[in-house]
Length: 548
Image (cartoon, rainbow, N blue to C red; front, side, top):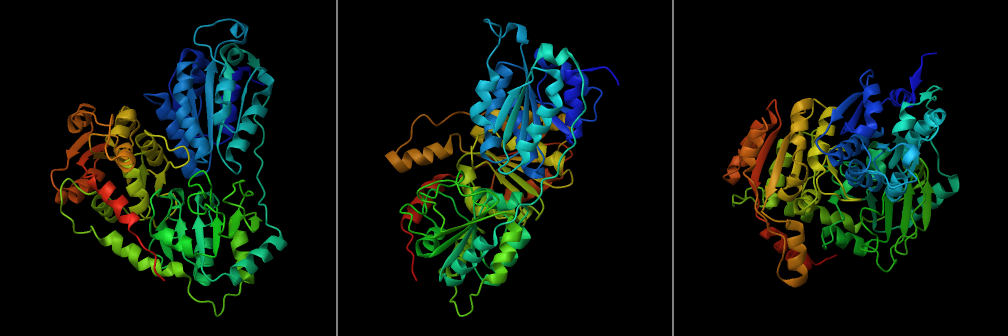
């Protein structure tokens, strides 16, 4: 058997798990791991900030279902990593974070850059540990990946002290076990079928769990045969194609919207892969009066506004098909929710020909949707534009509009777009970001250029933290502390070797976007946006009335 150290065994275990990329920043305390990676099939992607590396691993995990891996050194490197790790954990993306650490011989005293990283990462991970015995490395890595990838997926953390990394190690990577499907009980299936058969105005709320379970085909067949309208969460886009006549598009805005009317009149919510972390049921079922049927891979979370009458826990596709076999809805009237479809589409088309400038967010997103193909990917940052993308950018396929809506961390779009382009190099990828989010991780555009991931970044430019300004005006009638000055984004892009564009009229946007998407290098589009629409939308939703 070859002689190798703990870091080399760790890397062999990562190879065994099928790891393609590790995203991160080199440091003194992870030197042994970096040395081992020089002789590995794994590509180390050197990022410009640890947060960017964690976001890349986060989006890689969400797109592939396999744990993305990020690496940092100790102390400030690890604290920089935490935001992306927390985002993956609450967005249910499988991720393995690895940190370097001081040697075990100086953890008991005051020591340069030392923090108890196991304690620090505990609140933002499913599980984390420190390797203190080289012989345990194989078990720790296998456990980390198994826990990261099993339902509900999330983040795990492995801390490796530098003296342990250099110690001789024995052992081999452990065999990866396949996880068998879990099937729902026949009793719960039958109870669900009875509840749906008796409902007059059922609605389906579908979430990210249905995407993770690859239940799109089953959900579409289920809804179509039973003629039940479907609304998706921000992270459930594309489970039912938005072109489907039963699609009510996205719910989860904190304002009242068309789907609110359907929820007010429904007598059964069928929650499929719905995750409470995205949108609290207290917003749509505050009194707990709406009967709920929970269909998911895990039991329902405890919430006083989300107490299911029936829980169907098991493989989602199988559960839907078994329920469908037993449901009898003959003679039932069309659910009220179907009457909302035309109003929703009319609202969507309202700005199709708008030529006002700066561009209204509805128009910008309408045009973006028409340029992007069914398989192309939009990664949304967090800000006012996220709310408009969530409401107005609709998907034909799952995982083609990625929105962070569990932890909702600013700065994810550009690193996320790098990961998306690595996973799907032939697809068009757009990072949609506000000017605030852009400045948080724009340095990763150098990473994008270096690793050959050509995508387009669209900056919704309003010179402010627009979402907070929206909230301030809604609560207090004025704003404070949200405005700032921006650099010349076109010159910034060009200084990094990228293509830079500035939109000067609404008619410019589509041809500029098409040109930018054909570039061999990353491109940045500076697009002034008219966020006066934010308050106008709030006023419009307050006036929305629900009629039979």
